[in-house]
Each structure stands twice: as structure tokens, then as C-alpha cells.
Image 1 (tube, rainbow, N blue to C red):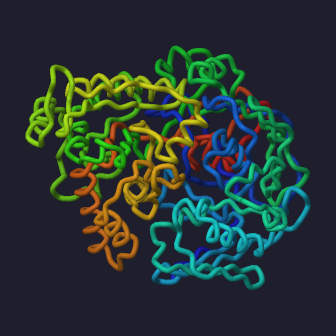
Image 2 (cartoon, helix red, strand yellow):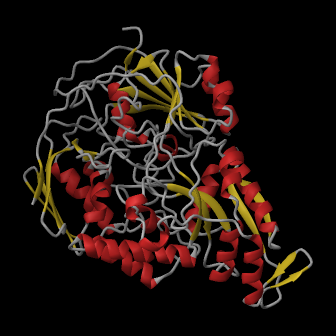
Length: 566
């Protein structure tokens, strides 16, 4: 039995990043980590405001922490209102998680039972006590509400005894440990009164975090520090989250100091951002196993044909996407397996060691012709005689993705595919992706301690939903492969490393041969931040958490911040 016991957290030493470390990305996603000041003393810190921004546009008034489409998820402020059971460090997945709302947790040998010991002394922002009943209720809510159980966790029994909650599962949850730890806990006394939690907008959120909602407008959400909290209160008194319409507007706000913390793509970051205040403006973008790529709707004709997807994959110019779309900042995913290297090198199947993707337009054209496709001048036609066209869509203002889509459009034209680049609002795009209302879109994948998280996000049949039904947990391309789903289950339930390795190798073969999505570049998890007013940010020297403001670890970051003025 593996047991995580109570540990006293202490404030980590402070180091400040002084320049760029590797790479940039653009949008919100999900992971965690923590470090803080340790005692259960509710004394306050200093005063001050921290301005946070994202290039995600105006927001609808929705603070439901269990929905990835909410304003709280889009801008990241849900992490300040609600808390997970355990803080895990997504950029150092080998580290043990840190106790948060759970003081202890333990698994049985088969990873089919998790026992959580819930922290005593935490309260909700309305003054009610947070207890084990709230934790049990939250997991029962996920079990009873498939639309909120985004990872399709196979819950069986959920029981509570004193301050302990026991969860049992119908299969091993070895691969879902972090997802369970990261679950935002919600108050039973509020949510039990909600008719439909899947559509609940939660406009007056009651959370356990150190902040509460003060004001909401579509452009700016303001949080104010609570009077008490189960840990030392943060020094930051007020958090202001703004949604800018695009990357350029967010970059301008960063450069003039209007925004102090963001996650935005900046093409010429040294001139456009860092040079405005070299002593205080910083970037840090650590990488992991997550990637970006072109998700293809495999349930729409003619993209349900694997031959067409293979040909598309053969002509995509990843190097051009790396240089033009991501300013040379996001490393190219060269392996056909979609594994970002060197992070994923130890997982490579033997047949893919040393193999790199090579662009081959003539080979793609020959593959298509060998399988019944024809060319009418510059137009590709299906075996049935229909011209192949498609739309490539991403949110307006996401300049890196849109530039990359332009590259992809030009590449596809070389094999006769008319691919138009279209834009949508961030909210509209998110809803469309979830419901399968697209031909192809650039999107990130989940990352984790192993490549399982990426492959599961892309290929898991348990996440499949017909077009028109939301699939917020992944498999946005509606990929259906019994072999892939079986290999994912075998990996998750493997009793030894040999079985797990064989399942991982099979997942790579399926990904390469069936092309459920086209990998392009690695997906760092980072941020731009200013030390003009606040110090204590994560850095290469002090990587206590991923710095991205939309991660669960954002709370840990804020708890570590101190006034730059002493």
C-alpha cells in the first residue's frame, strides 16, 4: 500500500527569473502543484492588487468550477475560489503531491480503492465548515452527472466515515490518480439545491479558497481576499482578471504594465515585451509531454477515411509551423508517435526510435491516387467524385494558432484540398469543439506523468460522443478504435511494467497508422510575469509549480508571492 502522510508545508526560497527560458504557448489547459507558508494561522499579509489577463475575450458570467467552458476556467480565477484535494506539480510529475484539502491519502495495491483523510479547519467563504461530507458529495455529484465526469472515472461506491472518504472503482485508477487529486471540491449545502449542475452558472460562488468574487463584468472579474483561510492569507489583497480580445491586446497590456501575469503567445518577445523592462519582465515556459496538433473530425466525411488523414499528415510542414506560427519557441514534434522529445524518449516503441516525420508531398499524392482519389487540376476528388474541402477553425485573436492554420492551409492545397481558415469567439469555439462541430482545429492535448494522458485525451472510446453531444473530456475528433480503447485500458490496468510497455507501444502504432490527430509542436505550460510589484514567482531555479495562471497551481503561485517593496 502506498501512503501519503501529513506534511507541514514551508515557504520555499525565492528566486527570480531574469529572462526567457525556452518557449511560449497560448491558451488555458489543466495541471497542478503547491508550496506555501505552512501554519494554520489566519493572520493577513500585505496589501495590493495583482492584475491577470488572458487573450480569451469577453466572458459570460459563469463561475462553475467543474465546467471547462466557464469564465473561471478560461481566465483561471476558479483556482482562487475552489481547491483540490492534493496539489501536484505538472512540470515535475515524479514529485509526490502536497496535502491540500486532503491531509492524507492511500491506495490499495490494485488502485481500485482510494481513502482520503479530509483536512479539518477549512471553511467555505460563507462561513460554513468544509468537511468530509462535502468531499463525498462532490465525487457523488461527478458519478451521477456524466457531463461533469470529464475523465469518465468509473466510480463504484463513495462512502464517508468521520473525516475519511473512501472511493472505490470498477477498474484500476493508476493513470487517473492526479485527476482525482485535482478535483475541485464544492459545498454540498449549495450544490445540493441546484437542479442541473451541468448548466449551473454559479454566479455567486461559495468556495474554500482564500478569495471570493467581488464583481463580475464581461471584461473584468475582481476577487477580494477573505478575512480568514485555513492557511496564512496571501499578501495579494485583490486579483483582477481581464479578458483581452486577442494576443496583441494582451501583449500590449503586458508591455505597458497594465497586466502583470498572463499566458499569451508573443512572436517577438524580446523586443515587444522583455525590452520594455528588462529588470522586471520575465517569461518561463517549461515543457512536458503535452503537445499541440490538428484535431480532425474523424466522424465527418471524407475525413473518416484513414487514407486521407495519412496523406494530410504527410504534407504538414511542422518546421514552418514552429518558425512562423510559434516564433521558433515551441519545439517541433518530430516523432510520428506524437511524443514530445526528449521528455517522451523513454516511452518510444522500438520501431519508432530514431524515426522522424519527413514531409512528402509526392508520396501523399501517390497514396491518394492508389486508393481511388483523383486530381482534377488543383482539386482533389474523393473516390465518389466529390471535391475535398474543409474549414480550419480557431479563436479570433489567437495569432499563433491562426498563423499555423494558414501554413496548414497552404500545405493541404498542395494535395488539392481547399482548406479555408475561419475564426470564432473563444466561447463559441470551445463549445463547437466539445460538440464536434468542426472539420479540423488546432488544439492542445493533456499532458501528464506518462504519454497515456495524451493518447487517452485523443483516442479514448470511453470519451466518445456523437456529433452534437458535448465531449468536454476529450476525443474531440470522435475517433473510434476498439484497439485503442483496449490498449488504454490495458495500460491503465497493467499489473507490471512489461504489460504496460506493450500497451504503450500499441497506442503508438495506432496513433501513427490511423492518424486521429496530426501533432505539430510541443505544448509548454508557462507564463509572462512582472516582478515590479510582486516577487516569488516560479522559475527554472525554483520550479515549485507551473507558472500558468489558468492552472490549479495558480493558487500556489499567489500564496508564494510577496510584495517587491518589502
